[in-house]
Image: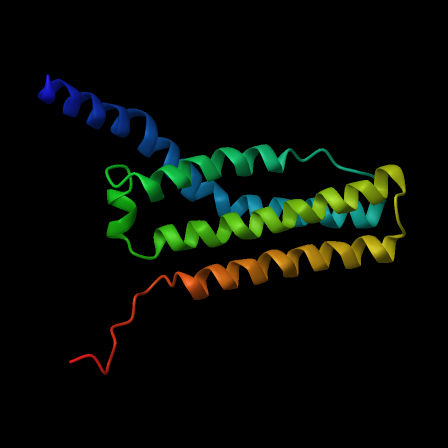
Length: 151
């Protein structure tokens, strides 16, 4: 029974999880540029876009969370030491830009506030998420430094 459970675990990881994570690793940086294009088109044409980036971020975030929390699934991503922190940073940046798109869509669709305020609120949201990310990595650094004075 234990062998069957281990075999199923490896089979599930190799057939389903790791191919999808490879897709996440390849496509995540390009989605960042697509979101920049959406922001540019909102500001130029003053019409809202239906990007669906929040749902993509949710799916990608779930799979990155699995790689972070389950040691068995995160083995290949911990071997390349920069990969998981890189994916986390991309995820936070995608979230910040998606919040910016939501704010700009409110301006373009409903006229909730002026264009200047929409851009200001978008930039404030991006800065706030970046500050939260900085606080997170200040409290839980990627590289654990050894205490030099410890004897």
